Image (cartoon, rainbow, N blue to C red; front, side, top):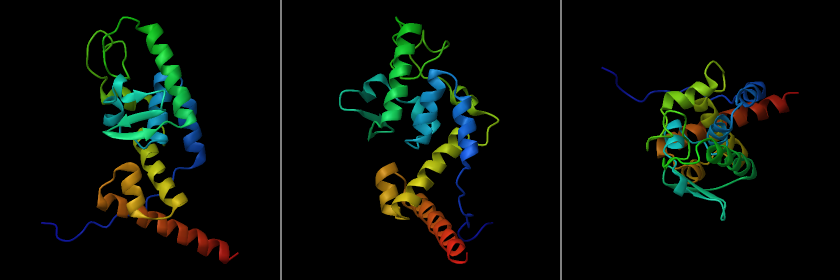
Length: 182
C-alpha cells in the first residue's frame, strides 16, 4: 500500500541536437505536421489524431485541438497548408473528416492509429511525447513558472501545471546559481 504523494524529479528540457534529429526525421508532410502540433502546440498524439477538417479555420488562422482554440503560428500554418495540399492531391475523393489520414484510413471515416503517428519518431530521443513535454516546460521557462499561465495556455490540470512550474523554477534557480558562481 502506497501512502503520500509521489515525488517527481525535475523535468529536463530536450537537447537542441535531439530536436534537430526529430525535425530531420520528419520527412513526409504528415510527419512534419504531427511534429509541429506536438512541438509547438504541445498536443498529445490522441488529440492530434482527433483533429477534424472543420477544426481548422485558415482565414482566421485558428485551430481547435482537444476542444481548445489555438492561434496558428507561421510554422504550423505552413506545414498545415503543405499537408492539406498533399492530402487533396493524394486522396482527392476521400470523405474522411479527420485532418490526418493515411492509406488505410482514406477510404474510411476514422483517424489513423496512435501507433502510426508515434512511429514517425520511434527510436529518437525527441519522441512526440517528449516534444510535447518540452514545449510546456519551455513555456514555463520563458514566461515564468506560473502554473495558472500553463493551465490557460495548455489546458493543464492544476497538479500538472504545478509540476511544470516547479521544474521550471528549479531549472531557473540552478541556471542563476551557475551564472553567479562564474
